[in-house]
Image 1 (cartoon, rainbow, N blue to C red):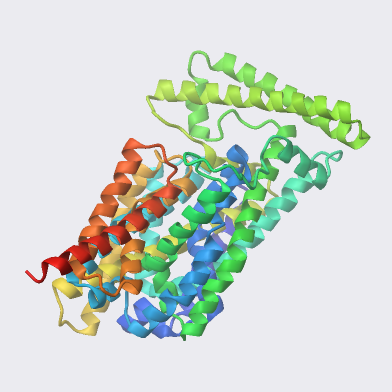
Image 2: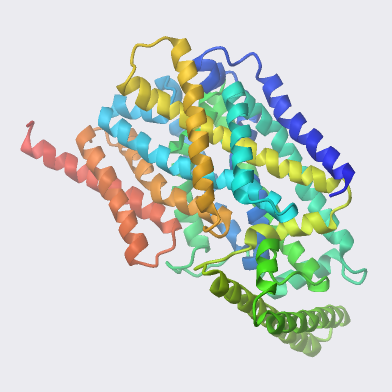
Length: 562
């Protein structure tokens, strides 16, 4: 990076979190301030904070790479989000606000019993603790890609910074930082599209770029075919996605805590409805950036592997030269085919256009085959079962082709996005650890000052755990898929338990407790013994919990009190 990029990066990394600490400086005097911001947040701050929690460094890095590799069909994953937001605004928001709780799971003890609250809290702590580790790992990709630093070092640095920042500022600092963060993230994405279009050959217009992306399936936004094993189609997105987002935004404390900070029920509802309208277009735009980066690399040769360390290791292996030659030939063929297709399209010759499309798709297949051969050789020589450089694609483009100064800004955005997202997760983990576990079962009558200190201690402990789990994240492939797969193992059973609590008043604690365990066992069985796409776990798990909760409750009622 240039000296200008270094200056911009350092200034941005200082200014963004400093704004959050300053803006929330009056709201961290006690536990209520630290965990709920004294219920003082306006709807737009909550809405942007909720959005920023998902639009983390993972989104910025991995979602664009996902579109480059697999097209834009991942956007279908979000089709259920508006539905979920409307349902939660009508149900969960008023219920949680009126209950006056610190955490979502505190409500479950009032509705069921202490053991159901404890079990659900543990499920959340496991799932969100893993997700926090994945979020912290994202900036490690930046440092290893640019500077060649070991990811163990970078995850430790980011983890320590997150802990210091979160323990100092609490949820007020996290929320206000998210507000500024989202503004900068969207600016970076707009800049990325402008840069891609500007760097295209003069003969390739924006419309041409869109056509070239669509001709090889990179703009495959909607798949109407119902396939239970296909991760992303209209039905898995609408149905499975709705259940996933109901679980995430309605049962995950990292999200519930956001709308619990609202000034009123109306303000919290507005924050969710804002996300219902804005989230899908934002994700579409992020994926579109990845598709445009793909078109750029039709005319400028990309590396065989985007991860620099893997590429260096691969170059030392016998057989590499042959694969690289194959890839070079495939790229040249694809470039000529893309140019021919663009020319045929402008001439309006249907026969020539059909032939050009066939040649273009064949050339893309050859390029994919050469890249797959390179990945296979790397996996074989390094003894890895799986390798993916999806998370490095967009970052490689940014650091190589962005204008001076903007590279530093984008890297700062990635770092602060990771810090902001991780800070919110650590704060919510601390809230559940203190309120649902520590205060409820170990120290029920301590002072407010004691619980404030305990919240900071648990923030630090969860930061250490996230750093440790981040070392495993390198084996998870695309981070944006990994974090949602993790959630799909745990959110369904939490969602099913809350559905029982909200709508099935005759179901008691014992039935809900055992139904949750049965639901979790069902999800694990689906993962081991079937090939059902992970989005459907959210439907299966929640439905199983509800069914068994009702059945077990009726059995208990028939048998009478023990």
